[in-house]
Structures are given as C-alpha cells and as structure tokens.
Length: 292
Length: 292
Ligand SMILES: Nc1ncnc2c1ncn2[C@@H]1O[C@H](COP(=O)(O)OP(=O)(O)OP(=O)(O)O)[C@@H](O)[C@H]1O
Ligand SMILES: [Mg+2]
Image (cartoon, rainbow over all chains, first blue to last red; front, side, top):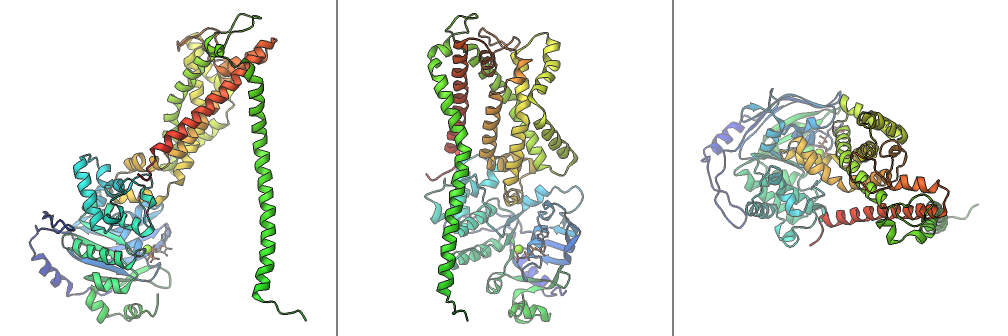
C-alpha cells in the first residue's frame, strides 16, 4: 500500500484555518461555533466475520476537515471498514476487530472505551435507508436528541428544520412532519437518515453510499452538504460512483479483495492524484472501469 | 415434424394453464378458510342462541339464588373475573415482556437460554398443575382460598403466552433499526426500550390480548385457588368467584335455570374478551403515526 507523502502537507495547510469558525446553515447563514475537526488514524486494522477475515491490515489516516472517499468493487469490505470506525462492526454476532483506530489520538478500541461515546462522536448513514418505523419524520430527524433526553421543543424544532434543510428534504416534508418516516420514498428516507445523523452534530460522519438511491438533483445537494460539512467536520463516504468520488472527496482510498476475498487497502492518497496518476495498476484498472 | 411454436403460442398455453391453476388454488384456499371459520361461527351462533334467553340485566346485578330457586345472576363472578384477570395481567405481563425481551435481545447468553427454556416448559405445564402449585404457595400458608391466589395463578399462566409473542415480535424488528439507534450513540438498553419495543408494540399487544383471552376462560387453576363465592367479594384474601368457575358449577348442576345462566355467562365471557380485543386494537391504531 502507498500512503501518500504529500498528504500531511495538505493537512498542515488546512490546520492553519482557525479552529473556531462560522458555518453557513442552509439559508440562515447562522454563525456557529464548532469544535476543532477530528482526525482518525487507522492502524493495522483487521476485521473478521466469525473465523472469516473480511479486511486485512488496513492503515490510513482520515484527515480532518476533509472528505475521504472509500472506493472498490462490491464485496471488497468498504462497509465493513467504515463500520469499524464507529465500533458498529462488533454489533454483528461473531464479528471482531483487531488493530487500532485513533480518534484524535485515543484508541476507540482501547480498554475501557465505551462504544456509545465513540458513536456519539462518529455518526453514520447506512447503505440502506433505515428510518425508525414507529417515529414520525420530525421525530426521526431529532431522534438522536430525543433519545438523549432533550425535550426543549423550541430547540428540537429548530434542529429538525435545520437538519432537514441541510439534507435537502425540508421542502418535501415541511407539510407532513408528523407522518410516519417509513411513508417516504427510498431516496427521501435516505435523506431523512442523513438529517438524523447530522442533527446530533457528530465530529466525524460516515456515509455508506448515501446517494445510491437518490436522483441527480438530490445527489447534488447531498454532495454540497458533504462539502459544507467538511468545513467543520470530517467526512468518510463510500461510493461506487467514480465521478462522485472525484467531485466531492479530497482523499481517496481504494480497497480490493483478492483471491481469498479479504479486502486490502491498495492505494490511498489525494483524490486528484489517485484519479490522474495512480501508482498501483489495479487502481487504474478499477478507475477506468476495467474490473469490479 | 412438430410445427414450430411461436412465442405467442407458448405464452397462450402457459397463460391458460396458469389461470386454471390459479382458479383451483383459489378454490382450495377458500374451502380451507371456510373450514377454519365454520366451527367458530357455529360456536358463536350456538352460544348466542342458548345464552340470550338468560342474558338479562339481572345477570349482572344479582347474586346467585339459593339452590333450586330460579332467577338471580352472576354478579360475583363478573366482579371476580374482572379483578383476578386484571390483577393477573398486571402482574404477569410485565414479567413476561421482560422475560421475552431478555430471551431475544440477549440471545446467546446463558441466562437467555435458561429463560427461553423455562418459558417453553411453563407453556407446557397443565393449568391445573399451576393451580395446585399456587395452592401450595399461597392457599395452604394463608389458610384460605383467595382472589390473590387466583390472580397469581392466572399471572403465571399468562407469562409463557406473552413472553413467547414478545420474543417472536422482537425477532421481527430488523437489525438495521437497532443499528440506526446504536449509530446515534444510543445505549443498548435505551435502544431496546425506546426503539425496539415500540416497533414491536402492536404485535406484543396482540399477544397480551391472546393471553388475557386465555386466562379469562381458565377454570382449572382457579378451582384450588379462588375457589368461587356466591356473594360479591372484592377482598383479595377471601374466596372469589369467576365466570368460568360459575359456568362450570352451573353447567354441571341439575337445574334448567342454571344451565341457562351458564350459557348466558358464557356469552358474557365471549363478549368481554371480544370487547377487550377490539378496544386494544382501536387504541393501538390511534397511537400509530399517520398522515396529519
Ligand atoms: N454480516 C456478515 N456476516 C458475514 N459476512 C459478511 C457480513 N457482512 C458482510 N460480509 C462479507 O464481508 C465482505 C465485505 O462485505 P462489505 O459489506 O463490507 O462489502 P462492500 O464493499 O460494502 O460491498 P458493496 O459495495 O456491495 O456494499 C463480503 O465478502 C461479505 O460477504
Ligand atoms: Mg457496502
């Protein structure tokens, strides 16, 4: 694997941006104070389903204030990889992780670390939309807050509207906020899930093919959202769409499963470089559509 | 030489055969549905026909008359049944739901295996055995038959029904829903209590209705616990009457008026169970999120 030496340089530049800054919220342009964006260091990560390995020895750094795209053929372990970043992999019965994932320097797999706290800091949008079936659209959008015990109606309303706007769903649902979340189209459900994930303002947002069931317009809006989120957060997206990876991401990681169907990191670096001048022939083959 | 078949020929032939098969299957299904519903309808008709003559206000307002005298009602049984079934449900259902939740959500742990085994065993224990058990547990030490003992016996009886349904209904809640909650940083217990259980609530409520219907009609476990009472008693430490007990006594007695009242009491029991089931359904329907 080839970790790009130019990556740290790019980050130094980004770190020069003041840590506290205003973020535009949709139309409101409300200034907001945000915490410093978070960085993730993945070191020698192995993931298993029972005895079967699914990922072997993945090491890479997810830079703060950036969008990192994970690309690779179906079944190469992209979903498995990002599920390791918020300790969701271990929820699958028999699934196991080895290696380290440092969230701003602290190993999320370290002794005594509560996965609940990790997941509050690292949010996720799933490959298949999964709104809470018993909750209304409104309640879905602020489910994270409500389940954390926040009852202030004013605040909930505000957060719901802001999150739904950012997820490009507000206009479609503003008149039926109390309808069931499951009564939306697949693409709307996915945007609802995005709203739900960002409503709790996680430091890192993992998105597993967030746009796979969206039309071009919503896809564009979601991509804009990712760029906007990247100004204050750290974004990791999985995508099958090369143009999308090229459009929205700053860094791209290419995963590939070899003969034994175990995913490995083939190449990682700035997106521009990966797409114009890949170092590994397999990356080039994949990007140009010759396999996978 | 066989003439060449065109696609239209093949489709035509298949279509006719498929339609014929469809009609046959439909007829079979209709017959089996009829076979299943007929006994139920007959039973209802029979109970209504036999029960109606004695189904008068006095049935609810009067106590049983002395032997041989006609008239009177089954008020003590109505009151007793409501108390014991209510109390039994109140005690038994929470225990059953907790047991079902544990058996499903912590499946694989030793305690969950034990709980599931115990539920299965309990489901197979004859109800008269449970009556004897409660006799030993409460009646003998307290030196009196009592409504409390009857309620406890009914509580034990309702546990396996509701626990099993809870277990099965929770299994139907997709993993993606739980994972959505975990990804928001919601702890496991809260995920179960606030997300998983509400998703299964309609199914569990149906199970409770089934369980209530079952214990409302149980006679055997009350024989050695509540015993029966010819006067209205609301004391939990005195013998208490119940509809099935009264039906049993009257139906096996020698008098025509008793038989009539036994039928009327049966009709009342059926109506009570039916009414409870309908009310539960209506309540649940109104609570679910729907279009405004
Ligand atoms: N719950 C599971 N149990 C066992 N094996 C699994 C499970 N989930 C995934 N796998 C296996 O792990 C490997 C990686 O799966 P993963 O879902 O991470 O692929 P992916 O790269 O996300 O694919 P796609 O692009 O199709 O979503 C596959 O071989 C898959 O069969
Ligand atoms: Mg996937």
